[in-house]
Image 1: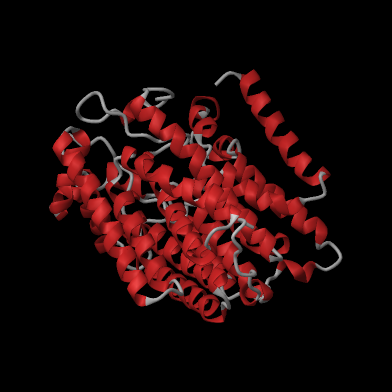
Image 2 (image 1 turned 45 degrees about the vertical axis):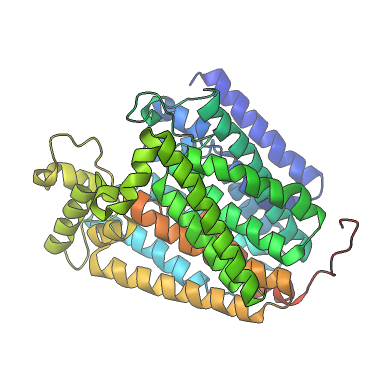
Amino acid sequence: MPAPDLALVVLVQAAFLVAVVILNEPRLLIPAVVIGLPFEYLQTQAVSTFGESGIGGAIRVMLNPGKAAMAATVVIAAWQCRREPLRLLPRSSVLLPVLLIGFISVVGLAWSDLQRPNNAVLILPLYIAFVFAAPVLIRDRRDLERIIAAFFIAAIALSILAVAQRLLGVFQWRAVLIQSDDYSYRSNATFADPNNLARFLAITMALAAGTILALGPRRLTVYLAIPALAISAPALIATASRSGWLGMLLACFLVVILAPVPRYTKARLTIAAFGTLGALLGLLLIQGGADAERVRSLSSGLEVLGQRQFLIHGGWEMFIDHPLTGVGTGSFQNALLLVYSYVLPWWAKTSLSHTSIISILAEWGLLGLAAFSFFALRIGAACAGVYRRARGPFARVFAAWLIAALVEIIFQSQSEGRLFEEPYLWLLLAIIAALESHSQLSTSNLPPPTSNLQ
């Protein structure tokens, strides 16, 4: 990427963040994080300029507007709390597991073959700091509504681009996403990977479904939630992400089950959703092509794993040889290529782990598994507490969505990797921390909807 283009990008990001502060609405930084995180185009294209690791790689990652907004959130929150620094320690049970994961990641470098931080470790302090800082800027129901609206706006824009990529052939900027039929393009919009787009659409569709159930005919639902749900469905299909399809079903099912609506309504919605999905998949199978083959592969567990079989085998061998501490943070690929290359078939094109639990076992061993188990249980308990304390349909559905979104991210990471590297995971943790530290966010409620679209 040419230097003038990079300078322009940095200038635009800086101007946007300064405008947020000048407008005296620093709390808009959180919606800016939601909208900015999907724009991975620049950081992907700048690999040749900054490289993939080290300080240059960290600088390249910050070309993502959402991560730049995260950094700005930390700075603004620290400035606002300069006289009351204890406000940066929200009363939340998510802080300890978050710090534990960060500690394991850093300590794991001590026994790593590389013994230098990769990008995932370098960006992790920013994510952790964001979890501490974001509750300072998430204080009332209006902030939550802005976050929800930001998810819908981003989903609508990304879905339109994803559908255009597939149908019109525009902005197909990654040649590696041409499928086996040498024609069909796996839509990725501005994400580097179509599976990441599918993950975002899956959790946003669940949020839209819950918002419609909870709020009824309001501006947020009529003008944003319904269009986001309708447009995201074909975009999700265009990603050709099997894990994304299943993740969407799981997230939407959990939101409907946990929503404060009558049981017969839940049953009707579930039947209608699965019926519609079955009809769409049937049409896709009749049409044929690469997407149809991916749908058929869902019937075979081993075939769904695809190239992940030898990656799982290699990760398991690492765990067997280093059961207590693993091979060290970020050493999976290096160990696979240098020590465990005998598990690689001749046709292997990837050496990065696609299964997060295998990555944890391989790199951190039983120590990492214990830390992850504590992380999952503690976050689950925090989500359950937020859900129990929620008063009113909106607060209850929003808490249900947080649970569903976290489950979806963990579920999809078993097929596509990117668990602790997933920025939306840390955004959700920050929201949970805000809900726990500001109890009025869960106990207050919106007035009932009226006929003239509030």
